[in-house]
Length: 166
Figure 1 (cartoon, helix red, strand yellow):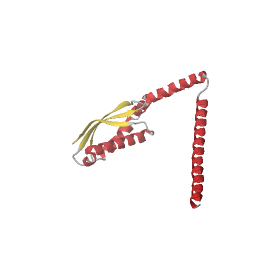
Figure 2 (tube, helix red, strand yellow):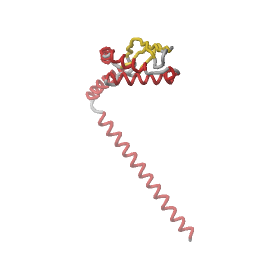
Figure 3 (cartoon, helix red, strand yellow):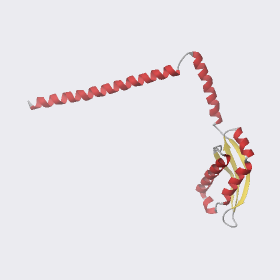
Figure 4 (cartoon, helix red, strand yellow):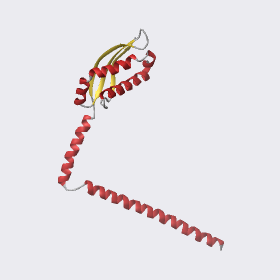
């Protein structure tokens, strides 16, 4: 008799959990199907609407092309004394930007850009520039300072084309 009561208690618990899981799965599938249907109905439409959307997508693709490879702007060479007496650095730098309009802005503000880089370079020591970590840190600092000087984030990357410390 105790075994029959134990069997009766276990059967309702298993079927109750099973029903709950099945109901949850069905509810999820219904919501997912409804969401998919709503998405296709809103994003779909007649062929004319699709043609207009296709034109908008082409414009977006053109913008994405501009965000691809950037334009390189060469900054004239720097030969400056480091913070340590008797030490100097010669650096050639190229700045990567996104558009020709940004290039025009950099050329207009070139004295300010050169000044920001010059002040940064003269504050460095040979120890802070030696090794790859120092050069990467200098690149980041130049990027930050030039973008601050320009008033907006125009510079994507900084490249050293020559780097000599003596």
